[in-house]
Amino acid sequence: MTDATVLQPSAMLRRAGLRVTQPRLAVLDALARHPHAATDVLIAAARETRSVSHQAVYDVLHTLSDLGLVRRIQPAGSVARYELRVGDNHHHVVCRSCGDVVDIDCATGSAPCLDPSELDVHAPGFVLHEAEVTYWGLCATCAGSAEPQPDLTAPSRTASSRTTEKRKNRV
Ligand SMILES: [Zn+2]
Ligand SMILES: [Zn+2]
Image (cartoon, rainbow, N blue to C red; front, side, top):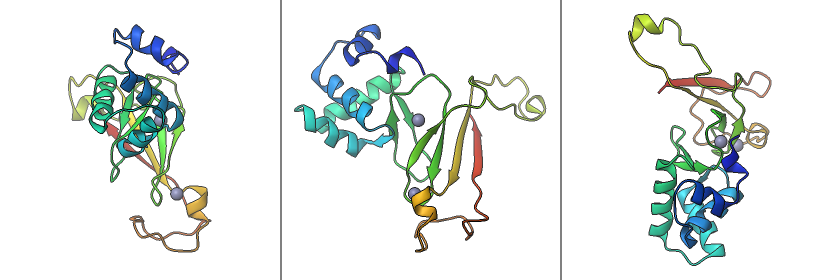
């Protein structure tokens, strides 16, 4: 984790050279309470504490993501989600059924944490920055559910043979 996650929101904004505004404070507060939340959840959460417009929340998320104060992730099949935990190259486990997202520390701690095989053969001269890893599977709640899940795209599997798939994309 970086210092940014332990700084007060107003200090975080000032350090990034941004003015401290009510919409920015509202969004940072919402993100602290709802890591990996989608925009609509963050709008509702921000409006619980301050009077901010939908558009202001969109604008703030855009600005903070661009400046690297907020990380934007978008697992396949999901809307964009946002979090305050930035700069540590952590990864995510995503439940295929309910879409729940949980942080997983990077195994090596720094990017890129995976060495692609024969990078020089497949992409000569390519300068690698990071590996974005998403582990797909079922959360404990969904894995224990007797009902088949409607949007489960993987082949059917039992709890005992359930494995977590690993998907990696070069960025
Ligand atoms: Zn689930
Ligand atoms: Zn995360």
